[in-house]
Length: 587
Image (cartoon, rainbow, N blue to C red; front, side, top):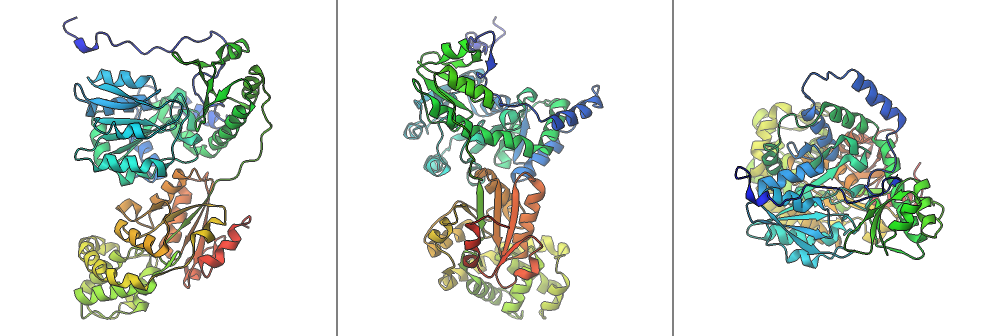
């Protein structure tokens, strides 16, 4: 056929491997359970009234809902018809004829087909049943890296900390490769790689709702990434490519996210109990909703009515973790007994502000801002009380913005006492001056940072890592410091924690994006945010409206805590005074 591309002449169509005709579906990596009845009925009610004769119009609306829920910047999320279709856009956009995409071996069977469709090739990166990173460093000369974590079909996974050197090395290349982190099974892992997206513009995070929201039938997935990159990919997506019914299903499923989450969180414990039950077989360590089991257990499992995925070329099979009943049957068919379920520890995340919580930095920043304003506006009266009054207004958690706000107010009201102006603006801020403050901020930042290089010596830590770890909570930081000042904080503290800082507008408190990203990264069920300003409190409360399935709590510390704490918040003079409460169940 001369009118077709000759390089695709031998491209085979995607076909599922041979499988048993009958049996329980433990071969497709689907969710163990279907939709809760209430969610199903809610969706059916919507579908009954859905105008089938009209084009689907809700993609932008659902994209926005999901973007806010995941703490992404505007334009930083692309919703698509399945994760495979989204990966096809990446191959279309980035693979020129002959370009290579590095893929794990063993890996997802669809990857080579997607690369070939657009003239590219795949370079297999040997992984075995683990996920060694050394071979990936050798593949950094590829045009793209498609990294599946947890990997399919083995379930292997690496921590964000262990992956970091590879991402750094990729970003440091003269022409960085595009790194696609395929997190189709992220909900079953100990943590996700969510925090990598805002730090590396060459990283895309790919996810699906097939498992997390038991929605394989609706064929929906999404990319998270740099808005400029997402925008380029979005131009390749065909209009109206998401069916109206799928969009309605996503909207309803998000309403019932807490119910789906219960089923998802039951899988890792059940998976590990199944692995422990095996007598004549062994399971590779898995962070997914399946096990890679050897020697090949397919025959006895299929004889017991359990369909599994045989893995050609290896003496092994991939077995999806199904319901409790199906998993018990799997264990029995392989000569074992599934251990009884045990209560699992609740995933609790302690998020800490830095200034005023982990570090006594008031004197340092007050002095830096005072000196900067002395340089920029010598006639403006300034005092520690004016500095604190700005913090009470809200929206001035970032001290560069605070200094810019002082300059904008001086332009508006003259070089007089700002305290009455600030008192009147509590809870309202200065929306009419917003554009002017943004324009003044770069100049204010340069002046403050110049003096902060000297005043940082006034800072001292308010807690040690050992004191934090004794609580038993996962630990993270959400700070209004920019990246360069976060580095100075680590020196003062003499330890580091996973952190989100003021590196972009959507991450600036009181915006909730940083908290939402941390909750996702740690797979947290409960989040306690310890802060010392009205912006910290507002950040927490905004996050709670967007992800209701997480138990959110605020702890107010510092001398101003009574001004912004609400009923139900914890209160303490200092973080150190608060920590003993966290080692026990909170009221």
